[in-house]
Image: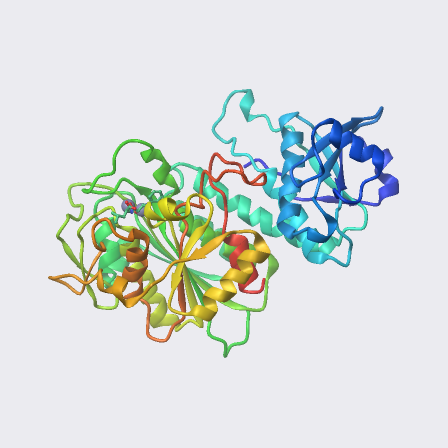
Length: 478
Ligand code: BES
Ligand code: ZN
Ligand code: ZN
């Protein structure tokens, strides 16, 4: 992985002593003097977020980066402005960048957001280049001025966890295997004093996870069911459960996907990358809460023993499932994880994350994550965290009429809704069948927002975005 993983901090007076190639200076469009306004204007810019103009002095190159109007500034503006600056530095092979913090010490969340933007935008995935494209010139980022250091450092830790999760997702399916995800979970577990349990194929099949086992039976790559328990809160407090789809490659199975862009299906484990990213940040920040993570992980392949359309599977909660399309496998592996979490942890609430449907990309584009659940107040809280973190979500309804569409004529449920209708909601309607009674639950369909996201300066558009980790950390109070 290539990214800057820490910030340096210095007082403004010390700046000249250091050898910086680029010095970023925050600029509010309504607060600049005439000279600066003229500089922006000469390049047809106004100081909006994303605007960048330069002044070259003897010592260094000063970049004035726009933040829009002072009164209207948001944390997301700070992340995006940081991204513009760092992308410029990387594009021009600069080594050491200094940047004046645009927020005061008394504005901790702005400082956190700015440092998140700096680190997140410094990320590049260069692991497989053997030529000079592997060169990553950026060596350091230094924050200058009266920034709130502990908040900025919190932002760095969170962004580092996001970058590590991006890495997991960017490595291809022959590297990020279920075994690798299990290994990563163990590394995080050791760092954060978590209990990590891994069930292999034989074990989870015997335990009754027939739905997950059904998907995994078409591949020779060993599948894993990963459980992480972080219990650092009051003993009496029920844990929060996080469930992630760890589909390390989705061919579609016997209902084979078309070849075009099938390689993108290495990203089908991005739900699990969110969960591992959250647990990784928790391991570093050590909040006083109880959280359990559950990740069913397998390839979806079409080996000789693969499940077939029409097969009927029995899930961990005893419900029978008619498999009408082997490519709707995410919901099958999540079914057992949701049922297992409901039974063994009785969580205070449960969230699942999955690249579940192509339909959500049609509905919400690569802009927002689709949300559906059984508890409106939890969804409202998620909406609030979305506002804080700039990670966009949008709720879709989960009315009874939709839930009826996953009833099967021959088993309890089928893994498809009605043909050509509301595919994303059908996915959630199916999952709902495996959530224990009275457990608040929300499903995040991240198929559109997990990779190849455009127009976010702090997210490289080629590759995994790492989105939703920050939202969840905000929600659970980390
Ligand atoms: N992993 C896919 C969903 C997906 C599609 C993610 C495009 C990212 C981009 C999922 O397993 C799948 O194949 N879903 C099917 C469901 C259908 C068969 C009901 C889909 O969306 O086509
Ligand atoms: Zn699929
Ligand atoms: Zn899938």
